[in-house]
Image (cartoon, rainbow, N blue to C red):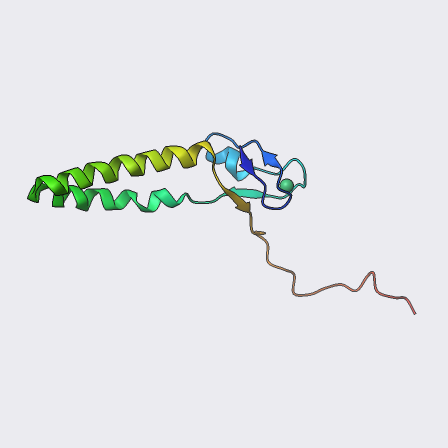
Length: 106
Ligand SMILES: [Zn+2]
């Protein structure tokens, strides 16, 4: 479940790794096109490897590396349970030429 940023209704979200489901996600209440917001915890992922290199230098670094790794995994799980969504930007650019069909006739 996620909250629609346009109408604040709860929207059923597809499985985290179901990319095709995410691509076609539309809010059933206001028809807004939604997309998955990249989870913040994924930024922490690449930091795990250098921490384990540092862990070879001492016990304390080893403990820090393990705590950091488990905290990152925990945050990733937490964010995958309740993902954040944002409004999808329109893929088509605004037309530069506007036809004045609905303009006043006289
Ligand atoms: Zn909505």
